[in-house]
Length: 146
Image (cartoon, rainbow, N blue to C red; front, side):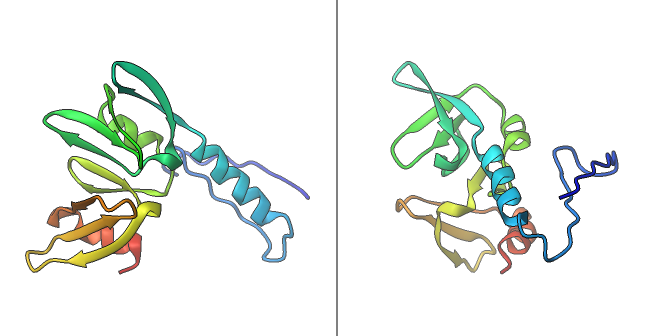
């Protein structure tokens, strides 16, 4: 297998474009490996005055509540001192910003309900739920192919 790297500063930061012949046998393995690398990022969060490091695939969402950034997992809610825009820059493609104050992991979406006021009620697999803002509706629909 021949591998060539071509740098293109016109691409967004942390973006990789892979060109391949459709019959390349090891391409699925390579893509899986790249996805695992991005999912292995750890995020520090505090719970009961102790700091824990949480893998991003365990995170349901990041949300700002009472001016505090909270990292929600199926088991716990951690607080973090990072800013939402800093977190967003480090996340894999499985995460989607749904409002000015919240980013969700689409892998934890159980169901969606479109409300009459133009928002979407997002229900997670753990039973928790949230609402999108109308401003982000076009981006959400595009990302979730609605």
